[in-house]
Length: 132
Image (tube, rainbow, N blue to C red; front, side, top):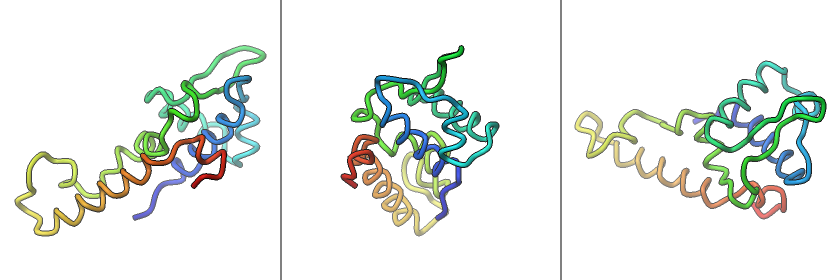
């Protein structure tokens, strides 16, 4: 399984925003520079995170992005699932009941649950503080 660059850049952005929480917003150009990502790609990522109430933005001369909640309240799993279409590794893991077509569905469900439990055990604050 390979995660997309959206997740890599999104977690980097949340880390930067978390280090600046709650005192100041971080401009899009600063994030672009720190993460080495194009403005359009960053905007797409931030829009996806905003849709899940992870980040917010303000406009204007002192505008920029900021975390919508304290870094202690934002799980890495939330960020990953916002950017990876809910981490559906295979179709049968998110279906209710047992998948009748796949004899290995229990393996995939166990993997899916394990990954999500791990990601949900880590917050943005843990990343900032090096507690990972």
